[in-house]
Length: 173
Image 1 (cartoon, rainbow, N blue to C red):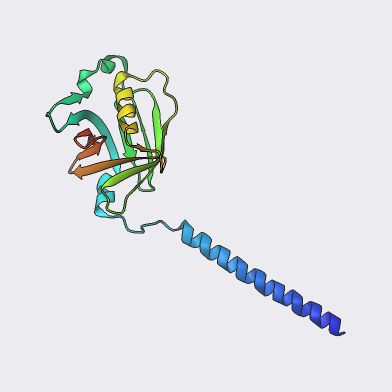
Image 2 (cartoon, helix red, strand yellow):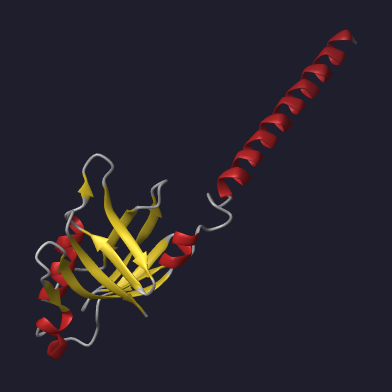
């Protein structure tokens, strides 16, 4: 009879242990499921939305390359659009391809970090589209394997830097 009580006690002990483990697992899942920032910052709120690339600007010499400078307008009907969403995802398009990815901001909210970024294909991309993709890749960090670009948002203008003095200028749609 003593053996049955011991087995029953060991069974209860195992059940209690399993219940505790399940509580811990569920707690971790709930914590990880929460958004990193329940309340968005002012910078994040400014960034959210659709942005159209209109030019590449060199602040040092004052020159710019504008969307109108390319003949793709005749051949393609789409502009380059990036949509920063509240869930930290990105969608949009180049002149011929769709864009997708995820993003975050660094702690000081001065660097936009593309955690993932891609397009469905690069076949048939216009010169304007290639210029956008090439400039974006200049800020690829091989250590983090992310694109990390300084940025500024002022009103309806987004500046996405690809060097200390050069940036892509986007207008809010």
